[in-house]
Structure formats: C-alpha cells, structure tokens
Amino acid sequence: MAETKHPTDAVRDEGNPLHELHALGQSVWLDYIRRGILDNGELEEMIRRYDLRGVTSNPSIFEQAIGDSTDYDDAVGELAASQAGASAAYESLAVEDIRRACDLFRGVYDRAEGQDGFVSLEVSPELAHDTQGTLDEARRLREAVDRPNLMIKVPGTEAGIPAIEQLLADGFNVNITLLFSVKNYEQVMEAYLRGLERRQQAGQPLDRVASVASFFVSRVDSAVDAQLEKLACSAADDGQAALARAMSGKAAVANAKLAYERFAQVFSGARWERLASAGARVQRPLWASTSTKSAAYRDVIYVEELIGPHTVNTMPLNTVEAFADHGVARRTVDQDVEAAHQDLRTLADLGIDMDAVTDQLQREGVDKFIKSFRELIGSVESKLARVAQGA
Image (cartoon, rainbow, N blue to C red):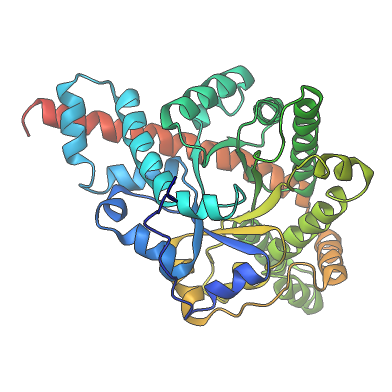
C-alpha cells in the first residue's frame, strides 16, 4: 500500500528559533483555533513555519472564535434550518473544527508515532464538579470527532481526578487542565500512573495512550504580583517594600520549575520503569497561560524560562510570533532549581500563601470557563435566532 501523504509533510522552514525547541525536547502547540485559519490555509502554513505539533482549545477560545467573527455564519444558517438547539449547534461547530485540525496534524502524529500531533477538545466546564458527567461527555466527544489524535481536555478538579484515571484506563488521550499547584499536579500524575496500571492489568496496550498535564504559569504571577504590590505599599520600612517589589515576576517560573522537578522524580524509579517497559510514555508537563500579562516582563519569558525535555508549551498566536522573532532557545526548566525553591521561601516569608493563591486561581479558572461557555451558547443562540428571522 502506498504511504499516505498529509498536507504538512512538506519541508519546514528552519529559519526561526521555534524550530530549536524540538531539539531541546519541547513541543510547541498553538493555543488558538477558529474556522478562518482552517478555511484559508493559515493553520496548515503555520504548522510548517513554526514547527507546530498540536493545538489546544477551550471555551474562551471558541467563545471568541464563534461570537466575535463571521467565520461560522454559513454553518449556523445550515444548523438553524435543521432546527438545532444552541448547545447542539455549538458542539457541531466545534467538532467540525477539531476534526479538520486533527486531519492537518495527522502527519505530525504519524511521524511522532503518537507522541505529538494532538488537538484538544474540552468537556463542558459546567461538568468540572461532576465525575460521571465528565466521563459521559468525554466518551461522546471522542466518538463524535473519531480521530486518533484527539485529546480530551478535563480539569484537574477533585471530581475530575477520578474521571481522568478512568479515561486513561480506557485508553483515552487526556489533557488535564487548570493546574496551578504542585500538590494538584502530583494528584494528576498519580491518576495517570493508576490509570496505566489498571490498563496494564486488563491486558490492554499502553504505547498509544498519551497525556499532558497543563500547568498554568502567567496567571500565578498576576495574582502574586498584586499581593506583593499591596505589601510594598503597606510595608513598615523601605527594605521590606523593596524586597516585595523585587520578588515581582518570580512566583510563576519558580512554581513551574518545582512542578518539573516533581515530574522528573515521579517518572523514574521502579514503579515507572515497570510501565515504561510495557511501552508507556511519560505524561508531559504542558506549560499553559504563557502569554505575558505585564508589560514589565519580557514578552517570551514564560517560554524562555521553561524549556527542556518532555515538555510542551501551548502558546497563543502572539507569543508564537514573538518567540519566532526574538526568542532564545536554551535548556532552562531544570536550571537554577534551588533558586526557585528560595524564591518561594522568600515569598512565604513575605506572607504570600501559595496554596491559597493556587486554589483560588483554579476556582476562578473554572468559573471563567463556565462564564465563557455560557456566553458562547448565548452567542450561538442569538445567531440562530437572527438566521431564523431572516436577519
């Protein structure tokens, strides 16, 4: 049988630093999708130009794509004619986009033998505290998309953890999202190991089960920096105020480096080696929320400081373009780890409770995605109504 060719099998442009990341063990995924870049060939071109190896999506991305563009108006018209409800219409639009993106990345997936080339689709954020509902929706979405390089995205909440373990035991590719703390990340890695062990005990293969753990970065600095500024303004002396301000912009990278340190520890030793010998692959840390929120920081800081083996960085388009233009590719994620520990100790001495910060960020993350999802459904409902009225 002749080898199947895919549209991204062409020779890639090697002219920018994004291509150096893969040699250092990091895959670049795009945190962005909309129908326009599928229709006009832009995503296909970006795969080559930027050496993209996957795509992530979430309710906020789809809310902006569908609600703030005319890309979907023709499809909405067809759905209105079929009298589809807003939720069913959204799912139809999203599934079509994800299928097409999966097809574009299929060449990457095949060449990487199932290690890369994934496109993530998130279960409804309204199920973040519903284990069985998450399982039911994940199974339905996988059947609807019907592509081997689909990755189902599930939040790492208390209810999400058992769903994640079950999905992995069932052989799903899973992207665990909204991770902010090392403690929560440890729970996710444990769920991954348990899921694979259950799968192995059931006599099922492990070599095509892929998972990433999406550890959020920039939002940590945004939250901690706000507390540091309040401390600086209310400090009893200039030295304390200066120290508080000097610690701005240090929490997020330090927190992520400690997460990577735990990753290296968990995916070594006898327990892991038993799974690896059966074909299992590590669950890669995926750095999410890597656009810079503060103009005071280098616009590619959350890429440059977290480069290393077995990692993924999912970047919004502006960060992809910025790193392609002036990023510096060098191994950093496991460098200066003791300094990262010291930074977090200093923050604790200043009164910053990182557990409280990261717990709050996860709650806010779930709430934000629920809000975006409801706005998205409302936008689709409005478009369906306008079409029905002939507007």
